[in-house]
Length: 93
Image (spheres, rainbow, N blue to C red):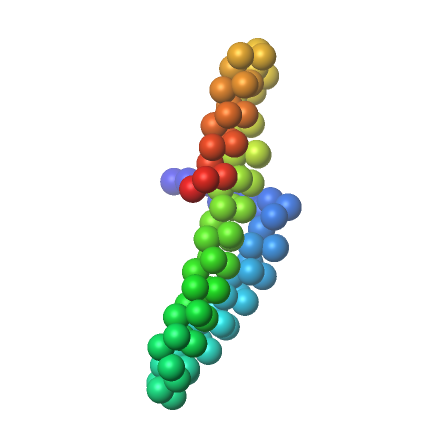
């Protein structure tokens, strides 16, 4: 059985961002049902997609900053550099 995830400093912001995206997505569904132009719908879908991607990126970075650091413990300079590089490259997910 897994332990419940701890709440990190960024989680409230992630939740707020996802709730905003959820409301926005509902609006897009209404746009489609109302027969709004595809260009308008596509633009709005793109905005929701970016908001969700940013929430995911923030969550992953937060996890790396906290959970990976806790699991790794104290490290030497070379090992620290490898972890820092790993954290840096995840920004391109």
